[in-house]
Image (tube, rainbow, N blue to C red):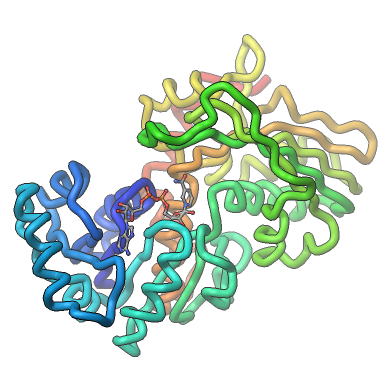
Length: 355
Ligand code: NAD
């Protein structure tokens, strides 16, 4: 049984924690954060809650005492310091904000030589040897002490571009990312009435290429942030040699982490899909069948990426790979089954059938 701790209990941390609890080969030992919140109170109902610090190394005992008081005042009896969680765990999933994961790696994870850790996409790629995607480089990640799961957009691009490359000879790819302005539980983020463009090219392509070298020199990304919290949308143009539109659709369909959706009234919108999924997390990337268009050697399509959820299955597979579980196929199946991906696909396909 793999013993797992989650450090940083926000948008990604809480989702990884509950996904870990659904795995038969993993035990969630606890979660840790720098401050209490309603989420940590919620977590404390069924898992021990530990305390993290903003800075380590100086007056730690006194600092932990101060943080402990804030947890107790908020109605949570902490199980200990994050260093206690680290002592017990085989692996920590670090889901702290951008840049904090690197500090944690240097300041606390390094204290236990045998500790493995998974980092998120806000950290620079150099934090780990492998920037992970279960379909592309699981084998490279087996036994790696540190693994990085890239961002939601990168994970989405890696998934559908891998499916295309399995059946086509790809020449160039241009992706326009229509990015959500904030996660739903971020009332202070935005924009709420504007477009915020990225520079061209945006950094997103570099991150994809770190994990998939086949795309080196071929991929350009750019984007715009818009006042939507539901999902990101990608508008994709690929040039190359393609077998046929049907074969591309079949290649998407072969991966349970991608769902192709149609529908009588054109492409379903992001809000319709979230609603149809009982307003729950959507682990799969959605390809809109009505947008898949093959024009000679140019392929166009649109995809939705549920920013809060698509990286969760990859985090679970990355844990198994890091802790030495060698069979990528078996890990992917275990993860997909535990998170109900087949049921989600069946339900959405029934509601939005392809033509
Ligand atoms: P978040 O702000 O929702 O949550 C971060 C949590 O970490 C908060 O609860 C915060 O209190 C806690 N924290 C802050 N400093 C800490 C420390 N020193 N030790 C322990 N806990 C600390 O952030 P998020 O959106 O979950 O992002 C986490 C990581 O996941 C980032 O690298 C981000 O880029 C990546 N990511 C985010 C999304 C998304 O849609 N939100 C998607 C994919 C990847």
